[in-house]
Length: 90
Picture 1: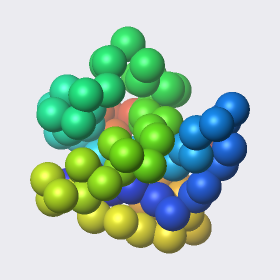
Picture 2: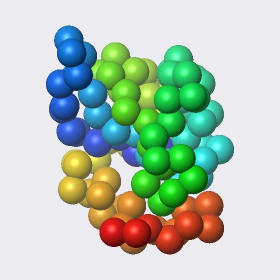
Picture 3: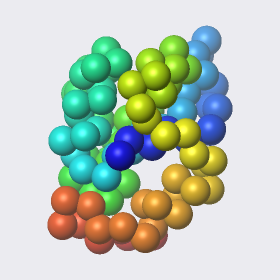
Picture 4: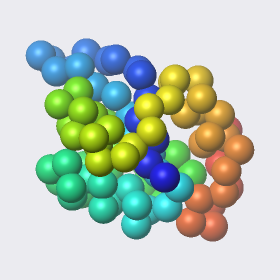
């Protein structure tokens, strides 16, 4: 499952949010589908691995089946999981 939060951070003229997934494969697959270059992955190889995406990419991901969650819920998912063999450091 791919998750996108409701965090709306300003970055220049863009508004950004976070996208995570249960697996790296799901995360990278969704990034490719919505047109995000996979080299922009953040916190690579940690339990906090994610992409910062703009709202137009968020809309595409939601149309492709991503689940929108509140920022706190996204952080809870990260804190409670083991991801690709990595335990969250929160």
